Amino acid sequence: MVGLETKTPSSNFIKNIVIEDLEAGKVQEIVTRFPPEPNGYLHIGHAKSIVLNFELADEFKGRTNLRFDDTNPVKEDVEYVESIKQDVAWLGYQWDGLFFASDYFEQMYDRAVLLIRKGLAYVDDQTPDQIRESRGTLTSPGQESPYRNRTVDENLDLFTRMRNGEFADGEKVLRAKIDMASPNVNLRDPIIYRVLHAHHHNTGDKWCIYPMYTFAHPLEDAIEGVTHSICTLEFEDQRPFYDWVIRECEMPATPHQYEFARLNLTNTVMSKRKLKLLVDEKVVDGWDDPRMPTISGLRRKGYTPEAIRAFCREIGVARSYGIVDERMLEHFIREDLKLKALRTMAVLQPLKVVITNYPEGQTEWLDIENNAENPEMGHRKIPFSREIYIESDDFMETPPPKYFRLFPGNEVRLKGAYFIKCEEVIKDADGKVAELRCTYDPETRSGSGFTGRKVKGTLHWVDANHAVPAKFRLYEPLIAEDDEDDSQSFLERINPNSLQVQEGFVEPGMKEAAGGDKFQLFRHGYFNVDPKDSTPDAPVFNRIVSLKSSFEV
Ligand code: ATP
Ligand code: MG
Image (cartoon, rainbow, N blue to C red; front, side):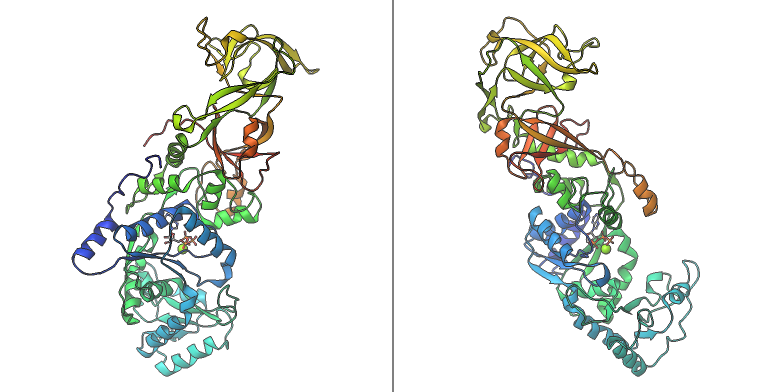
């Protein structure tokens, strides 16, 4: 490991609370959970929550559950369940318990019945719209429902009949009976159960009523003995209801909710709704398209779990919103790969060069370091012969001042090989540069100690007689600036250059590369062999990140 993860995790306000709770003997063991709704793939924002929950418990020898918050059957799917498990494991975390909120439906139902018996819940016949309209505003109290004072027996009967499927979707709901005049709108008799005749990925057709998230979540935490229930700031105003549910449902365990600011990244769409739209509208090639900020997209692009974890630790946990510069994420993958990745040569936009004084049919194998910054990575041999490719923009017929690369009459160094001099430019019928004729100086072989003269430019190249044709995918943000615009205009603002494919060549040794192998390609950046589309004869490389950034943490 190259030092990325040696830092001790920094302090944060939630950790301080945990330390106090342990010292005061309020809890014996820290239990956290990561509770995704299986309605999409995980993204980099979820990674922040995963790192926080797993590492917090781990630091104090506690436990962390992976719990699927699957209380909304309409949007949920097993495909998402499987992808989430895969992503959490890939990030490097092993959950202690694997649970589904839907496994607790029977217990939740019983707790709702308990509320009814205590006179703390009632069946309301109003439509969802009527309920919303009678809720009042921040400055005016809500209106009590005409059904609010039904007797316990009547409520028990109606709730049973809701469960038995006697009512249509939206016909009846169960509401908590709290306070329609509460200054906290969330306490104005929130809905806790609704009728929904929908097939559930886990419970099938067993249920036609489903608990609302805000009622279900505290119960799930309590059932699992979660001690510190960490969520994002939007839920702060829900905390009084969270505590109400735990108390009035007489749960034996008392979890507490703590809120932190969600991660926002520049140049990144992070709403699951929008990400799903990109997939459904086929703007991208699935949830794992390397342009997606999903864990699976970042993985396919070439991010490592080490880099993502280090990033999540660095951004820290706070209670105030901020937008993190995406270059900070890029910084961590560069740091991680700097000393690990093999440095090889690839030409993305090839221009053929014929070395006229090099013997025809000859190939020599030149020795080159695998990573100049990490001698432990050793050396390899690369072929050199009469025909090579260079990058077409490493040549200019009429160069501007201070241009040190190739132009007619100029001499440059080929990295790891010889000096070559441009003697002649061959053009095609359209007048475009088609090929260069150069000569080489056998005295100048790299490593020979030649000191006769100096050249200012060094070019990367590949041997044309051995090179492997390859595709390179270069990325730009899907959408330069995201705002809370409606979905349609969001789709219209997609960057048409978010994916550019170039066809060039790589060193022959890279034929052996397997999906997921990572390389530094000289001057072009870090690349990942695409795990889906790459084959040994037609390798495909996804650019993870370019080489330099002005941004440092
Ligand atoms: P949605 O509400 O659109 O379904 P969500 O982001 O809330 O999306 P969940 O599956 O409910 O999705 O999230 C699981 C956990 O991840 C929650 O605890 C949530 O707080 C956390 N989380 C989600 N997005 C972020 C983010 N951007 N930064 C930090 N934590 C996040
Ligand atoms: Mg959510």
